[in-house]
Length: 525
Ligand SMILES: Cc1ncc(COP(=O)(O)OP(=O)(O)O)c(N)n1
Ligand SMILES: Cc1ncsc1CCOP(=O)(O)O
Ligand SMILES: [Mg+2]
Image (cartoon, rainbow, N blue to C red; front, side):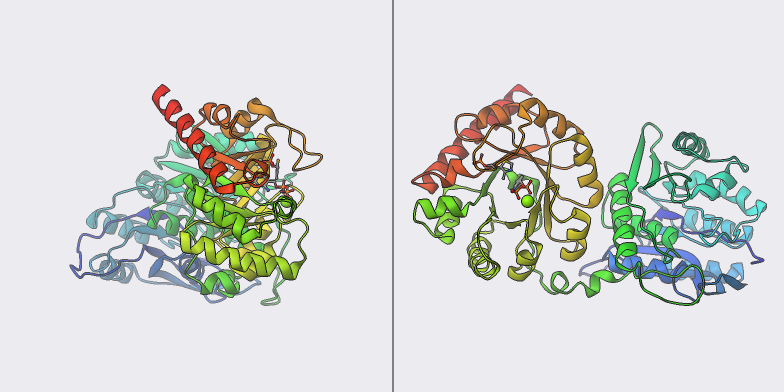
């Protein structure tokens, strides 16, 4: 390919002209990039990724490329005056939240962009991601454009997301082979001006997982993701940057936006790892997998997860309900009456038909009270009754697969006993962690306890909210909440509520203990 190109920078922007019309303004990403005729990368990838994540995407086209799964056959560069005209058209009219740049095929176009971004002031968090070498290995940026990046674009950038080859090119061709190399590259690129840097390690040799390094000028974060074996990786860089832009446009801060973008790309690659488009070595992947994932796309009743829902988490047990002669619907009705804030159906003995029927009845009760209902272990049952989510353990379905099946809006909790499990839960897209058994219990056999110290260690390592479980009741719930770790949001209990004669009264008593304990912690802090 003759002309130089740059991919996927991201800028958070505010247009100066407001429409003054009333109504809903969707999150808006403007992509300034090249067209890919194969539609795996460039403008086409940006539009699909933004659309999939719920952001509107306007487009300023800098070049038209003839490319397919074999490579890039030709480039037709759009004259810079016409790039400027497109920029003016969009920025003078539309309320753009984030500008993301992709292929910038000439130094003149880099300058036009920088001038437009100065004319239409850009505030907020997110900016540049230079892509100078495509995933197929095509070199996309000439030395003069690299200089333009370094001098003009990077200082305006909130994030740059170079892959290893690009990071190396930005730093004069240094070799990057290890995580330590990536960290020092991130630090050096940070000195060029961007507020944050994500060095993507997809091509790192001898690495089992896909490790990226995020640097915010103070701290490094190692972001791990599963390495997915597929030929369909064309456009991953553009897509990741577009997803970051979409998340920022939706109001996210930078690190969570990067995490969400990584999760999205991982899921998209996983979902489309076997699709066949084109005959060349590198195929596109399917950005819109969520649209095909049926149920979650149709319903709008999903309970939006609030970590405070974990405060008094009631987990059912069919043996206990049988022992006390009550139906599952009576049991959860009483728990809700007593103040339970979330319900989990943990029915280890029910057959599938019974489970779906009782879960559907419970769902109606929970929905009418605005209390979320999760299903233990069984993603199929959760889908069948349109539950608010699931809780899975370390030997149940992996969180990433459950997320694919359930979609982005369902709640997923995962049991974790260690910091490593907690970190993985976050990367895989869980919403919360259940940590335990904290104390010995007869409700779950062969379940080693972690104690209050183990609970604290997991909480401190977790970026997700945590609920404690195992042997917790009125007598010790105060000690659990008294650990005072800010992301410990509540306790999950089985026997303390359901192996008792009056579920509503027990729930009320436990709630009062929890309230007292949290007030005491607040007073101390
Ligand atoms: C809130 C909560 N935390 C942990 C568990 C345990 O889940 P798991 O480890 O999968 O064990 P089973 O419950 O399936 O026996 C939970 N159910 N809820
Ligand atoms: C499901 C589960 N996971 C870890 S401990 C446990 C059982 C909790 O039951 P109880 O509240 O009766 O101790
Ligand atoms: Mg389980």
